[in-house]
Length: 286
Length: 160
Image 1: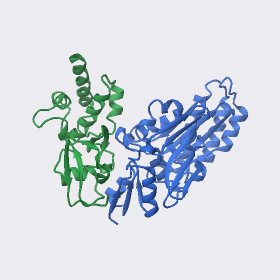
Image 2 (image 1 turned 120 degrees about the vertical axis):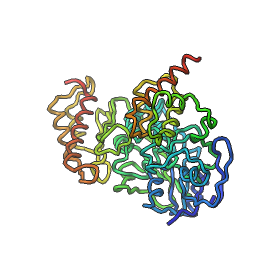
Image 3 (image 1 turned 60 degrees about the vertical axis):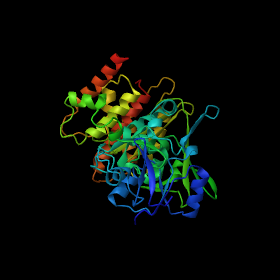
Image 4 (image 1 turned 30 degrees about the vertical axis):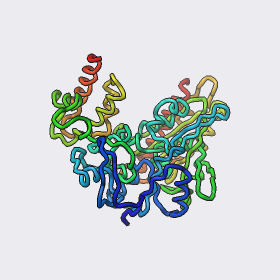
């Protein structure tokens, strides 16, 4: 189906009106996923709504009282990899820096990453580990979903026709956090396996989320419980045997498949290595 | 806008795009509708960087930009970085350093190098490699490209 209309709304209310009129319109943010499909003819999009020129969606707000950061859906990965956002959510900045190339990062947005919702999306394990809240709006109103309820399958979300992803709110946490990924080179790589670890110093806990090893981003509650019980959060100390157990629990939580990028066996192996490496960085003392 | 005709700001000029299908990429429109053949099309999926242009000052792959969505934005292509026959310092450095072999990737690399040097006066080698990581060159092995970028940075610093 060839594209027959392109709309470029400049305000959120205009965008929501367009989506109310044509709820099945295809939303185009940075274009780094959708344009590939349009160029190759693999996907048709009759009506396209371009949302990366909506000023309201291209802003962020840091709230030190609440300890939160709100990112508008139009915030790009190049903005996330730089100060000040990188200082508040370092794991998200690390993930941002692994996305594509500078050209891709100037275009690609956090809202677009959520909209595509690939299990290999680099921002998603971090948003999952941070227990991000995803904001959606339509002409009928607004709603907010936790990440775990938003991503319902590979490239499937809870977004309904007529809705637009408007932004995401994440906590600004004290404590170590990081994102790691395995791929064939540093640039232009889609993750073969990825892992985000976030330390919540106040709650004396960690949150581990794995990407590219299941139909959705996977949390690892058993691995997290192990660290809550065995980790010394004051002196960043953890025993090597616990690190090894942590890796094993991460491997067991993974539900990988064989595909053109890798094998299930390698993915399971790699994600255990990534998780263990991150835990050691978070707790450098034996 | 659902039009078959729209206008784009390209290299400082307002250019009408006629008889176009609205699903066309900016790369396609630049080359096939506006006759600007400097930006190269290879992968059409943002992997190779040979179609790199500046849109409102940001380095983008023009194959991933929906042309009809770029109305009102300032687009600069390789044709717009310097007058024809009068290469700028980045272009001249590529020639002087032997950073051009088959030349296919060169326009995209010039755009990327230009964007990097506008932002950072003395980039390290790691920075240069990271900034040019979205541009693939299958001839040079990149050594002379990095040399070219470094030579421009040195020349600009000594000129100020």
